[in-house]
Structures are given as C-alpha cells and as structure tokens.
Image (cartoon, rainbow, N blue to C red; front, side, top):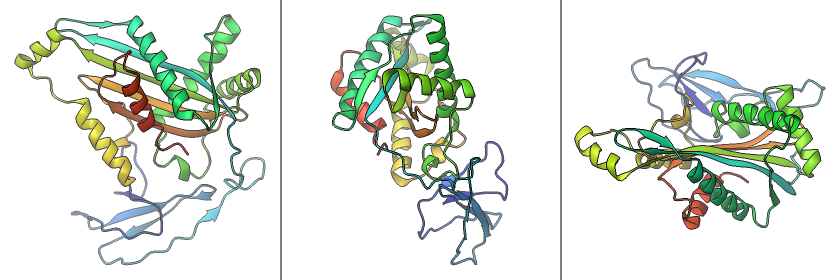
Length: 296
C-alpha cells in the first residue's frame, strides 16, 4: 500500500510505500487534512481511496486484469532459474583530485572483475553464472547495446520496492531490447540475464586536504544508511522521485535481472556504499550481498 498526497499521481510526486496489506498505519494528514491510499497487486488494477483523520478502516476491492494475449496477468509463477548470464559489472571509476578529475579505466576494469567474482559467490548453489563475453563483431555489439540501453532505462525508472506489486510485470522497453535478451539466452543457454552497472568516485589525498578549506557537503555513507533504513521499513521515500544521487565519494551500484524468453524485468535494486578497492574481495562480497538481499 502506498500513501499519496493527491488523487492523481503527479510527475515527481513523493510517494511512500507503507507496507503489505492487511496492516495498521498511523498517518500524518498535515494541513490538507486528507491523503490518498493506493493498493497494488500483481495481476490486478490498482485501486485508491481518499482518507481523512475520521477514517478508521478501509477495504478496497481489486479487479483482475488480463494481458494482450487474453491470459489473466500475474497467475503463472516464474520457473526457477538454472543459468544466469552476467553482463558487466561495468563500473566507471573517477579519481577526484583537488584541481581535476580523472577516469581510471584500469581501476574500473579491475573493480568490475572483483564484483563479478562476488556475484558468482552470491549465486552459488542457486544457479550457474556465466560472464557475457565482450562483443566481437558488429551484429553482436548491436545486440549487447540494445540490451544495455533498455536495461539501464528500467533500472532508473522502476521502483525496486513496488516492482513485485505492479499490475503487470514490466518488460524491456523496445522490441530490439527484448529480441537481444532472447537471442543471448538462446546462444548461451541462459534463463535470465543479470546486468550490473555503476560508478565509483574516489577522492585522492590532495582532494581530501582541499576539502578542509572548501567543505564539500554530502556523503555516501549518510545516504547509504538512510537508504538501508528505508528498505528495511519497506519505505520507498528514498527512491521517489527516482534519481541517482550526487556524492563526493562512494560506490553507486544498480542491478536488474531480466528473463531471456520475453524480456520481463524480474528484479531490480540499487544502493550507495563507501568506495571499494579493486583488491578488496571481502568488501566487494559484502556489498554484493547487500545489493542482492532482496532477490529471492
């Protein structure tokens, strides 16, 4: 169930996910003296109702919806994954010095390899994980670009908290993206594709000294703590409106799991952590464990 400030959701409006029904919730109605509660469930049309401080109990009936091919949405359970094709992790590492910034391709490549090993460890015992090779020809490169494009769009626009409850399962945006997922699945015998990407900013010694005089506000640690607390509460306040936060130093990662057969987005998550050294496999494993904590 979500709490909204208006009857119709406006672009950029803050929405708070309160939890799964049935539940009891104390609401702050503010000066307006009214709120709107919206209930969502996979396979059903969302339903909302206006509530005031006098409202004590509500019951909302939900209406079943169908898919374009006539089936009822949300009824078929997803089959277990036997093999997952890992794309990336692609991480852009920026070294922030006092006078300039420099992108380190070497550190980005090394950190990506360390995180890939951590992903395999997270999936150990659940599914085989194979790393997608770098494209060797024009057609293969075009296929991978289409997958990257659509998956990145999904990772930025879909709320990880609400994803399991959306009326219809979201799919990759374009036909070329869905075809790319299907082709790669058939070629490598994979059931799903896991895409991991992100960026890391590392401050050098000179930049840290310079900050004593300039005072750069904001920290990745504070955002990570707030995000983790919100996820523990089932509160999506920190992902509405969806954005990738700016930070002075830290590692931002986002990941999505896409089914090869139809391009359905099965899972998404994102988060911010303190910088991870490319040589620190233990810290990379901890970060990946947190990133994948919501993946069933």
